[in-house]
Image (tube, rainbow over all chains, first blue to last red; front, side, top):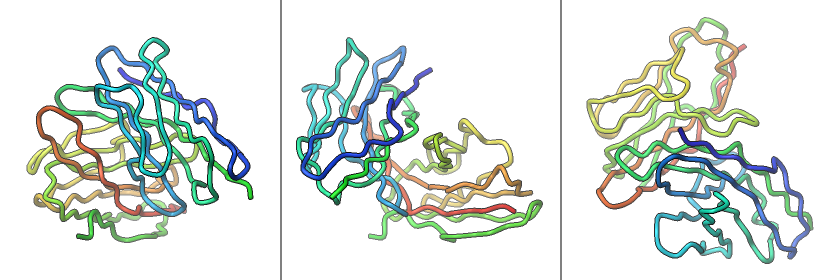
Length: 114
Length: 115
């Protein structure tokens, strides 16, 4: 069985400040890791993913996440947030073989304060 | 391309009523999913269809049924709605090819309230 823990349900941060959203996972097999973003009243969109290779992955809008196998973590970071980053962020894990069941964390609401 | 569409966007039911949530995708994806989203619980998989003609239970299937009508459409039916089924329902689709994970594309959601 696989599981995801998002340690913070809400993270308030001032505009242009850095932010880190924490995610830890557990799984008995190799995994793929993801961050999804959900803007108000919308569905989820894939922000970035780790499948293999470089442990540091980046999105087009300045977010990055680093896969740390020893700490079973996949924290999401951005050096300088904007108002438009206000959203809910979901960490997710999928097994890497066969049918890929995706398990989502409970989400972290990022509130960017002007 | 519209991506994944869901109807209706909002619905209010009384306990015991039935309804069907519709989902369609125009990306020629093989796999489709139904999730529910509840505060503090993230997304939980209700049912999925790995390919046309197959459906399987997810984490929370009780009280729901699904139909994979064709490759494009995957509907979710509540036969006798209960207040515990008040939630936001998301449909998603993806495609499987060997060698890597395929992104799930989500619809905009259906907000269901059961009184």
